[in-house]
Image (cartoon, rainbow, N blue to C red; front, side, top):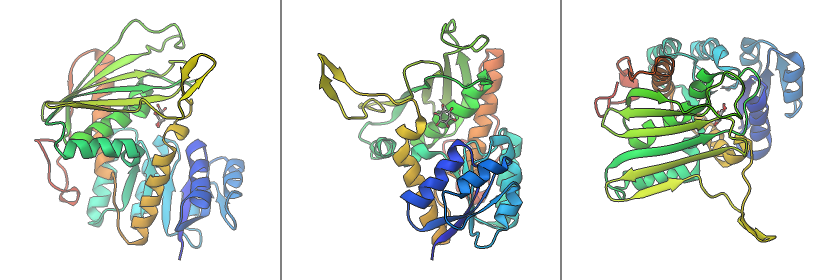
Length: 342
Ligand code: ISE
């Protein structure tokens, strides 16, 4: 029978996941929705038949028929819901970031390690993007030789009011941090942030764009251009430079059109459009694994590692210096450490 899901947080991502579970993927249904805004909870619950609406996450988790929890509330609210789900030993898919800082992420890791089995998948959806998957297969297959560098570009059309420079790291570059760890199978050891004179398109006080430089434990250098007011759309690119070749993803999303004396295509502004397939595959993989009694994909340790790198990056951003990443030892539950990472 179908996996009964409680969705906590009915904002942009939460409501989209309710739609996805109900209309796109198979094997699950949404049985409860929670949001601090009761109206929003009701509106999202209405997308699913016979689904209850709540304002408290615990009430949704405790609703009849709930087998698993999808957390899509704002990052600072994640820890309490994660710890509650782990106390109930319920499987979780938690949107990124796992939690806003390394100390709280480590508390989640420790709670899961105490259970002795994995229950948490983190919403680093790029790992489910077909293009990124092929890029990783190229790397692990050895066809490019040893990786030397990654050149990454992460651009948003514009920022909402209240968007701050630290959010460029914690909300956006956090994806490249996870992508780099996953593609290279290495921890990130140090971070620097460099900034050009800000673009006139950026809101007053926001130094946009910035260049984030990551160094892995194995000596790979990753540069990330983060430009969150580029004006023209949402664009995410990644090029691997290896000893024997290079490979790049993120350039071309068809259709390519020749018309009116021009060639080209469109760049949507919404990341849910660019990564639609990745989100669908991510949630389907979570449902399938959960129904088998398994937990797969990026986990609490990956969420913690990303939070630890973000913390170093925020310090580097504030000081202009090169900051080393401090990481707790990896619990045995998450497998062996690689390349001196951890
Ligand atoms: C947003 O929070 C996301 O998660 C998107 O994937 C990211 O690319 C975007 O820059 C963030 O604002």
